[in-house]
Image (cartoon, rainbow, N blue to C red; front, side, top):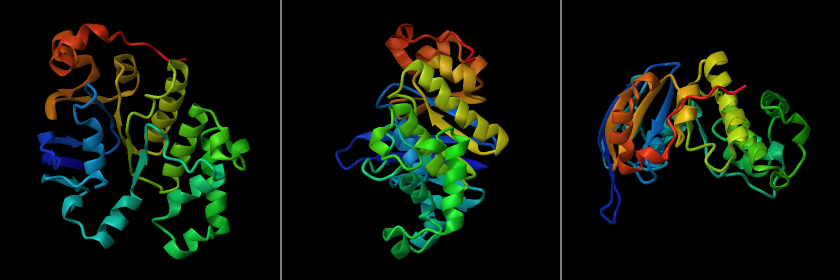
Length: 257
């Protein structure tokens, strides 16, 4: 169980990115987070694993207060929380395998990892992770030789190396075309269903929300304005999230083949 309790984030310039946000996520859910750009989606995800420090409130993961964890405790907690980024966050000049192996940094001696010394078991695990996302044949390629969709699959394989119980995906398909978007989200869906990994995924397009999410929360100007099933996201509720731009975004569910 993930619990977000009265989470608030105010940046040094006075920008209120999150304001008193509270909700719970049960184990095994695929939760979509929706809202306009600047609504607080990315800040929320980054506060969960403390890439951004909350100003107030708490994040509780399986009874453990992440926001109160000391550095040693946080390192342990982050082993369980994978993250997939919009712009992939790969070391472009390094090989695909090296990028994937960085997902083991929470488990190995930092000094040895700097020298690229990973165990044979970890290297085998990296190959298996790449096979799961269909790019084992790209293991020795440089990351910058891959297409955007392939780079995002490397990002998913890297997250898998943590053996996570929770996966945070920050607009993972925003840089991809519709066909590739479905491809990437199907991989996340498989991890959710087959590995029972809880997924929190920020999305912009409502057809993707209807196709993949089991539940939706909507943010507007840093406040929680919707929490429910995709089927409950009526045009009126949708407009509460997106305001006057609501008519510009399709809400028609589509099935991906």
